[in-house]
Length: 267
Ligand SMILES: [Zn+2]
Ligand SMILES: [Zn+2]
Image 1 (spheres, rainbow, N blue to C red):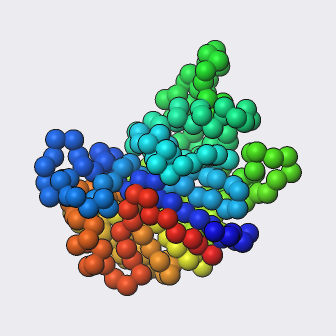
Image 2: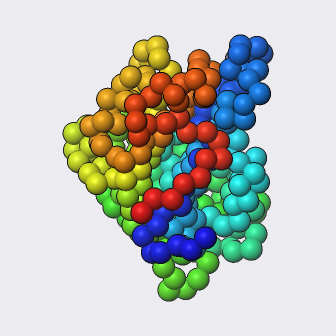
């Protein structure tokens, strides 16, 4: 596969809500479905632009997701927010430091960074144990560049953080080229919607049909998708309340459910 400079290659590492699907102990028709698209590991995403490899979130399934997709380098991690299902795989970034000792930059909203520092004191504060992953936590509030961590003077790619709200919690979605990714959202301010102008492909939180205080329902996500007007929108962070095959058929043209391993290119 050839990449021109503007092509963003995206793989959905995980598309499930915080429990994952199947849910432990559940025998519903979704949790017992034989369709591999109904196996939803915790929500995360992998982006490649040329050689540069960027992971969005490292949840509890990150190790298996990285092995499954053959991730062999990480130039940066973009954290959406500090909740368990998005961060607790952070220690599994260590293998990406075995061959390249340069710290991995991890970008986050200020509130996310503050909690990450206290959750993972042994990584970000103590500095006493030699086996800790070497991570460089960086608070961002505007567009920033991700550099090729594997070469001097290598390429860079610009990333735009997009502030949204998970209930009252501010968090970041991210835009890279004409691809944007927003999960764990119940509100996207107008100023942030402005940053999504011209997006070709959007990934958006769509938890389930029933209302939830901190996530978009399917209907709310359809409304947001229409406002953004991307050519293609994929839904993520889904519960066990619908089968992929049934639900994706009901969605409007241009909107589909994502599934673990789904890979697409954005120009
Ligand atoms: Zn989540
Ligand atoms: Zn179930």
